[in-house]
Structure formats: structure tokens, C-alpha cells
Image 1 (cartoon, rainbow, N blue to C red):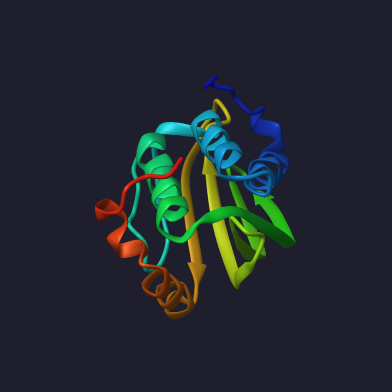
Image 2 (spheres, rainbow, N blue to C red):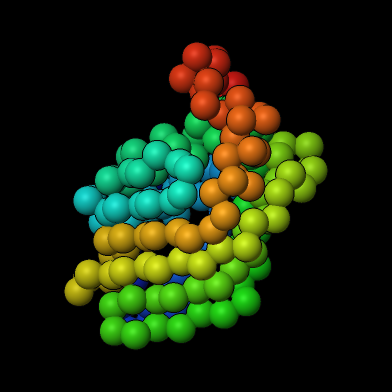
Length: 151
């Protein structure tokens, strides 16, 4: 996987492009994560493990795929605005599994922060953790480490 730097003047566009890659499938999401995140990028989400590097973020995406069959996430962007190095988004995250079934539509807000080189240094998500937790429990994602990988 290559490392790409996003121009700091286009943070809103960078967020839109990054999230669009998630709709292309799990492998695209993993690749985009490595390309966009800074080495010490913090990713926080209610009800999910916090990651502190692209490698940890990729592992979390992989666990979601392996445990619940997450195939892609369509981030329906309702609003995005930038202020300095931050981008604020209002979205609905539509999570699809391998057979094409939509398993949850999760309204969320996010804050993305960039460094001077245009790398993502923080991504904080805000949503109703009860909905995500119910999905994770129902699909056994908490048991991901015990399940064999099926890539």
C-alpha cells in the first residue's frame, strides 16, 4: 500500500474522498486508511475500541469484516464544513454485509483533524452507541479474535 498526502487546503474534500473509499469495499477502506492516517492517528467511536495508528484501524476494520461480514459502509454525507485543520460532518453510515444486505443505518457526527502535511491525525465519531453495540453483539464482533479469518 502506498502512502499519499492530501493537500492541506482541501480538508473537506479529503474527508469526502476518504469516506467514499469505504463504499468501494473493505479492502478499499483499509487501503485508504493507511494512505490518509498519520502514524499516530487517533480514531475514537462510542462502543468500539479506540485505535492509535493506521495498523490498529485496519485491524479493527478487518475484525468487523471477519466477525459480521461487513462489506462496505456508505457514508451518506448530509453536511460537511471545515474550520482550520478540522472538518465537521453530519452523516448517516449505512453498513452493508457481504451478501449486500443493509444491516444498520447509523446517524452520526464526526470531527476530523489534519496536520500541516494533510495527514489525518484524529477522527472522533459521535452516534448512539446502543445501536452499534446491539449490532456488534448480534453479529458476534466481540468474539472476532476467536474466529478464523476468511479473507
